[in-house]
Length: 79
Image (cartoon, rainbow, N blue to C red):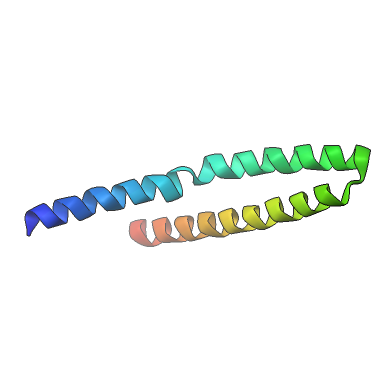
């Protein structure tokens, strides 16, 4: 039983690192990528860049939602 508990604890820690550990880096990267796409759009006006921008913004919304959940969970644990 304790061996199973130890294994699931390690698996959950790995999952947490993969999902939430990369959350802040991913958010920073998305902001940078969106800014670059917007600069390119200013010069080219490409429809493709509009689609890329929309896709990145949707991805950012997901990341921001996960970040909000993370902070709510942390507040509940410490509160």
